[in-house]
Image (tube, rainbow, N blue to C red; front, side, top):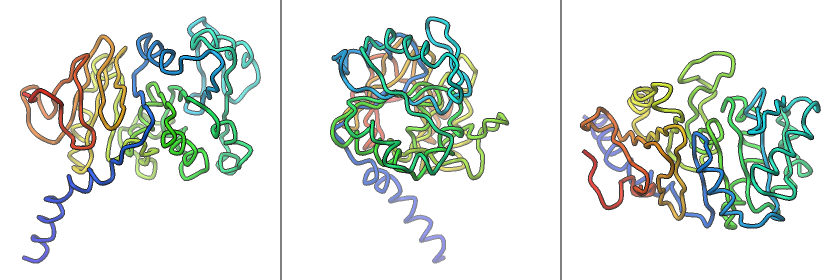
Length: 279
């Protein structure tokens, strides 16, 4: 009886704990599957070709720029050309690229120094586990959180969106497994959140149902291609050409999730949509 009561009280107050954990900050986050709309939002938010912007490619083993340059972040070959393509992509005069696979280097002051006066950060796609192995619990994680606290901008596409949550899906770069024990922690820039990009295109609509069933304290956010959320003061607004699915462990019309469309807003602190009721 005592055990049952403790379980009941935990589940009763779990949403309250989620609210307390989801503290507001002064910064802006973009979580997206990628696309031109996200790029345009980022450019408009930075609003200065001379602004200090940092690009983190660590989630990737290989990246292809919009202009076709292919670059392995672990190699110097094509790095200069890729960086030039980034300048054109984000309308900047300069951009700082920081990258390491060494956890100790990521924990050094010299490595994170560019973040301390940066206005914005873009985190690339790739595999979220590859990113978190290098950076979880390091000074880089701390500096990203401080950047938001002082009003900066953090944007991430695909894996770069996943790591902004607190739960990391597909954390094994060598095996396509949804939940990977020991590789589950994200940066928690968005607390008690699991993010799944490329939702409809990759037919992933039901993946987060499994995750949220296993961890009911989490809220799931699924993002279509060319779509995302821009989040300010705990309120996210959908942008792009697709939809965003919210997984709240409640049965809805389309399953164990409901859809947000472009222009719809979601309150991440109180975990509810704004100005409409989900079906």
